[in-house]
Image 1: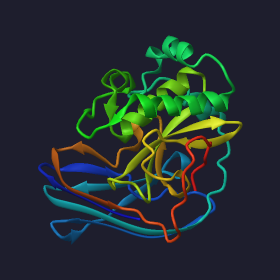
Image 2 (image 1 turned 30 degrees about the vertical axis):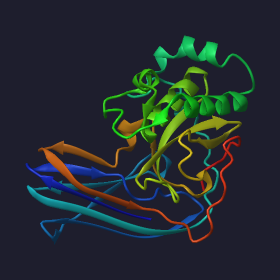
Image 3 (image 1 turned 90 degrees about the horizontal axis):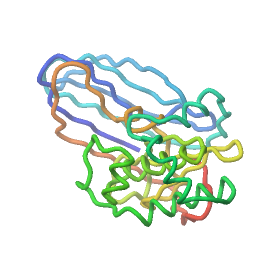
Image 4 (image 1 turned 90 degrees about the vertical axis):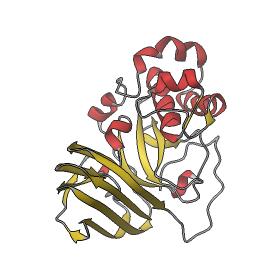
Length: 262
């Protein structure tokens, strides 16, 4: 796994990156992370959040900023214990998952079945309703905007999936991942649903097999898992390059299965 995020900083600011593989029990991660400003190395502070998400914070003066990350990951992630507080959090409306607008719609669209059947029906609905179309959405669009537009990219698919699941009283969250096999290659966003005490990935885009995805950051919606946040002066993104590959052949993903992340 690797990524490079380069931007021009126009005024003194604090930059926060979420590009490192999450610290998850069962995985061994060998990694390198570096930040330079106009080519000179700068100190980086790491903060660890829920689900092993890691945020790397840098104080940056005006100049050309570059964050680079590389990692090799082995092992299989241990099942995550269910946190009852977060179970409650992941049923609530959030900035981009405007659940309160979906209660009636979701109840009529998915009227019966087990929790697992409802979750898979939501995945199939989103996959059939939306067209994957870069440029069809804006960074301000939420789940209801995506439903009306019927198009978007991975974050839009995930937001709509999460909103519908929460409206059906199924705890759901959004996760940024490295996704071997993803085309076009980029940071990828998926939904996760809690069924029978286990988090499983739902991805209406079908762009990559879920078993080989590597968790980066997990939260309520895109506001919690952004690869770059800026707190201060203005910046302009200049380059984003992401790679993700598996040493083993990629598995064939079964969209009808509830699949946990590696």
